[in-house]
Every structure is written in structure tokens, then in C-alpha cells.
Image (cartoon, rainbow, N blue to C red; front, side, top):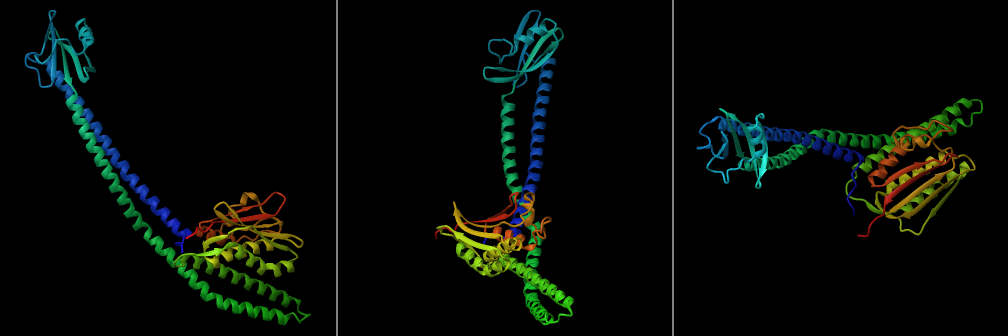
Length: 408
């Protein structure tokens, strides 16, 4: 048997847990990225400031040409004679254009220059009438910066994994009370519905006996009317309790689903409602295609879905009308379609009618309460989909699509 699908509440808890985990991990990740970016910016600025300081010191040092600082190339022009530090090859300045501009009276200049596949930070200025250009090879700084960046990226990846783990742990602790509360609510609904069903059935039976007794009192028609209302009210109360119990049993059912013939379920539901349809003057028909119509599910719950949809259609189809039930296969799904030519509903409310306690507001009114809400819950629990359509000229079609059972 296939595993039991998660209930809507279980799916909600899982989504909530994922949302908490993702948001917590995102918060940690953003904070970590901010620290990494800040560290990278500080390193770059510190390196740049340190390089400028070294270059300015080299320009100000009169002995720098003969004894240059490590990693710095010095060019000096005085009275038309260009001298270069001993590390240079060929004696040409790294940035000849800046050297010439300062030599002809231009202002001091600092820029990065690429030469022979290497990058230099070049500062050109004057010292005691001489033009001096100092160039710092940035290769070592860039290597150090690359090593630092790789370390920061590695730390970021580790931090991301840690933040995801922390987020998951926080989410589990956060939703644990919610899951416990929902489980207790389900048990309470199941226990209360089960315990109340017997006394409500007894009250309904006594109400029917009372209605039968007062029906023979022609001088007290008010008592007969009150008895009829009492029977109707106790019947509705019993239906509500049955729906609550079915829903609670579906949510808390242990084990897996069985293979169910959806066409057979539909045929049985139609046969069961035929007496009521004839009494109401409504034509109730059933049609099926070649099938197979096998789905994985709880037969009792699926029967309740068909009963609710047929009951809904019969309750809102006038005398002389018709209700059609169809079971067919569409692609990988088995489909039930329950159609009627009754009062219909506002198409804009096609989703709203499946909310709990939603009710119709026009015509004779579609009494949307717990029935359709529980229909959707049962269908969702079976990984299916239920939709409702109503054309402008009246009538309604409720379509249930369930995944077809796969061979085992």
C-alpha cells in the first residue's frame, strides 16, 4: 500500500518550518556576507593606503634612487638627467606620460598602470626641483588579497551550511508546539464527534417519533411544524458530526491507502441517492468510460466526497431538473464530475465556496458550510484537486481529479 498523504495541517506545518528555516538561514547569510564584504573593503582600502604611504615616502626620500624600498621602482629627473633605481631594466619610467606632464609643470599624479603583464601603482611628483616617479608592484598585494578572498569565500560557505543547520533546528523547536496543538485538536474533534454521535442519533430518533405522534393532531398544526423543525435540526447536527468525524479519522488514519475503484464508488453513491432524487422529481444519471478507474485512497472518505457533492446538487436542483455524475480517465488522473442544472453560483466565488461556513447569497441559495470544505480537505489529502464551475445561465459542475493508481 502507498504511504498516507500528509494532511493539510501537516503540509502547513512543513511549509511553516521551511519558511522559518529559510528566513533564519537568510538572516545569518546576509549578516555573514555583510561581514565578508566589510572585511574585503577594509583590506583593499588598507592595502591601497599603505601603498600610497610607501610611494609618498619613496618620493620624499632623496636616497630612494640609490637605495629604493623593497618592491618599489624609482625614477628621478634632475636637470634633464634621468636616473633609475638599480632594479629597473632600460631605465624608462613605468608611466612616461605622467612623468612628462609633471616635468613640464603639471600637478602630481597617482594611478594604476599595467606593464608587461603586471600592475603597478604609480605616483609622480616633485622633490627639491627634481621630478620623481615611484612605482609599486601590486603583484604581491593581489596575491595576498586573492588568498584572503578565497579564505573568506570558504568561511562563507561553511557559515552558510552552519546557518542552514541552525535555521532548521530553530524551525523544529518553533513548530513543535504547533504540531502538538494540532494533534490535540484532532483527537478532541474525533473523540467529541464520536461521543456525541450516539446521543444525537437518539435525539433524532425521538424527534421522528414525536413528529409521527403529533401528525395525528389536526387541531395543533403548530406542534407538527415544530416537530418537523426539530427533526430537520437534529438531522443537520448529525450530518455535521459525521463530517467532523470523517475528517478527523482521515487526518489521523494510520498506515497507507487502499486501491479503490472510483467508478464503483460513484455508481454506489448514485444508487443510494436515487430514491431521494425520485422523491424530489430530479433525474439522477451516472455515466462511466472504459477505465480503469483505480485510485489510492480511503474508500469511506472518497464515498463521503461523492455523497456530499451529489447531496449538494440534489439540494439545489428544482423539480424537473437533472443531476449527472460521470467517472472517467483523463491522462494520469481519474475524474469525477457532478453536474446539475440548478440555481448555480457566482463564478467569482468558485474558490470561496470551499471555505468553511461559506454560504450562497442569491437565488434559493447554495448552503455551503462544512460539506464542501471537507470535500476539499479529503481531496487534498489524496493529492487530488477539486474545482467548481457555474455558467452564466445557471447550473454547476464540481470536478474531482485524483491521481490514478500505478501498478505495483
